[in-house]
Length: 273
Image (cartoon, rainbow, N blue to C red; front, top):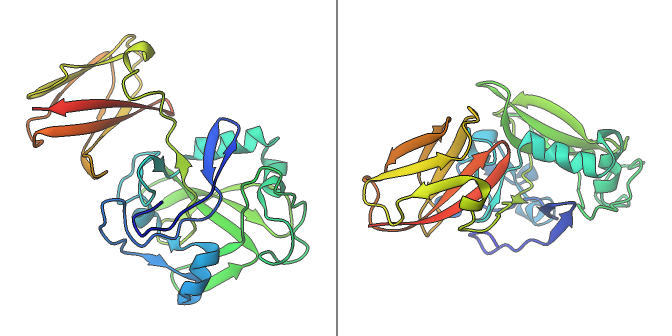
């Protein structure tokens, strides 16, 4: 369920859990309004069917970190380009994945809706796009953002077409408005970071918090800190074996760390005194 009370069916595909519908929320998880969320043709009745369209910055809640929560409900995030690739690979490769994701029939797809079987249960509808000026491609294309940017102006997305069975990768202007499909965070357990070679201490923490990687892998990791209402309070990057972060700016309370390392998402609950 999102902040607005919309509920979404979920399907497991491989090791991933995907929403079976495009997001339609007008608010982020903390209740703040989304600045650029449009119904196709500004018709809210179409949003009930196809979801809403978001520019990349709004979809990401102005983060540039892969797998950011963005407009998704708590526990869900905008899929990275790698996560879209993981989905395609599980379905047999990009050349055939689209057909296995598209809803069957011509109610929400233009003829011939080539190769559509929806055997994955993803249930993609051709929700179209907004190109800064015009709404277009309804019933012709499903276009959904990834959380992976190409450069300062472009971000990656995936699209499915009415006339072939592929899942196509592409990159285009962040200012265009596309659909959002949320994927569930792959939590390995709130307090299992130690068994994964990562220690977070002390806990409870007063000021300095240390993150200690078992091996010095030199890979940059992303850490987001969320309060109990799901609002992002801090975000920082670190690489190497150990990192110290000043948590003194936080009010006392319980927080959740979301640590992204080589595409894997890990969680740690901490108490700030």
